[in-house]
Amino acid sequence: MPRDIDQLRRDALAIWKAGVAGVSADRLMRDAVQVDDHWLVIDDEPLDLNEFERICVVGAGKAGAGMAAALEEILGPQLLAAKNVTGWVNVPADCVRPLARIHLHAARPAGVNEPTTEGIAGTESILKLVGSLTSRDLCIALISGGGSALLPAPTAGITLEDKQHVTTVLSAAGANIAELNLVRRHLSRVKGGGLARACTAARMISLIISDVIGNPLDVIASGPTVEAEPAPHLALEVLGRFDAQSAGVSQSVFDALDRQVARIQNAPPCNVQNIIIGNNAMAVDAAGVQAEKLGYSHAMIAATELEGPVEAIGRQLANMALSMRDGTGSDCLISGGEGTVRLAVPSQRGLGGRNQQLVLAALDTLSHHNPERIVLMSGGTDGEDGPTDAAGAILDPHTLSRAAALKLNPADYLRRNDAYHFFEAVDGLVKTGPTHTNVCDLRVVVVDQVKNSCTTGSASAN
Image 1: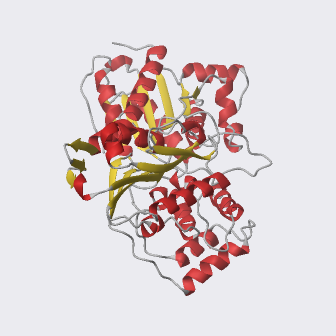
Image 2: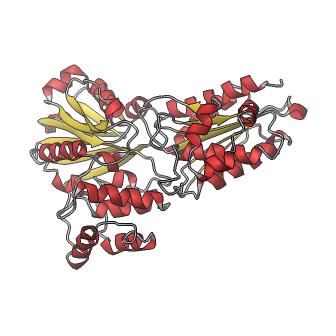
Image 3: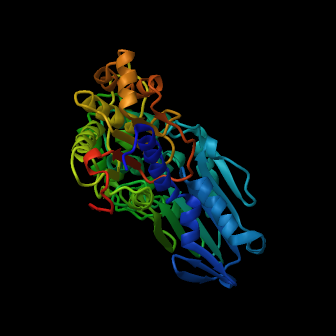
């Protein structure tokens, strides 16, 4: 049955939201953690609670509040009291809420993905807490995307401002998440296994929601519970590749890395087990289930490696949408991944995020074709997209009509990274607030195939 544009738009949003719901912190935690009498079962491994006097919960990330709340509910009031459960988790300010035993600390403002003095204070509290544990205690770490900025502990000789500037310079130059985290790990006392090394408990179990394509444990939140091979020379190579010294990165940063090259040593971590409980592919799969429920013949693509510029991704999706609409195959495409954005110089830069930039590039491509019967959207599964209050953006033929009526030039807004103001003017922003999860980005394309409206079934491309 043919679908009008309003229906396509509702379906695209429903499919995207189902993908996000499929990786909600509550759902992922309940799948990973259960209590059975005196057994705590984590990832199907039973732990005898009689062996532990205390349970300590620490962590950081955009999903931290949801993970902590779910863990308290799973353990229940009796076990929380019996094991003197205590904890501290660094989260964005708009995720803070009162919990029974675990303290949620506002480590940065909402929408500002940078380390702060509040984050440093919270991290020091976490380090003090894990350092107070004994061989009769269990430590559970809750790690999710955004943890790099939320768990700052600058190494000796480095200031918070130094770290903030390094992140800003590399991000603006187009560094990907792996490159960013490699540098940040070597400028931190807690990343690259530092949290695990500071822990004096009998055992640490780290539950991780991955926001990095391919799920490399040492990259997610810069791997605070993952013993990483020290490679300060590679961090120096990244800084050199993006000409960071010419961009004003402090000499103290280079000096600190040089000192690490001269004297590399790591203290052994405690007994730690790292378990990934959620990732981008799971969100894509959940979105696919919803698409099938809505009657779409869907294809799914979850990236397995880092992607390139979001503008290229957006234009590719737009061209695929045109082919889908005019073809006889799938009428819904769900994809997951994370692209990069090269920022304009500050004097020209507007406001936006990588998902908004991606959709704007797709719109720019569709503006040169007939955009009828196409809806395309992209959003961050954490509900944040750059320093904005939007998760992403959505386009349909009405979006292009409004832009034309307002004489908005999408290419100009693209050049200036000002996608937020473009979509704000044409009612194309997608706003969700914090979702309490974070598994990269999710994109949905739906089309109405008039000549093939009776097609049913499902297709999958991985």
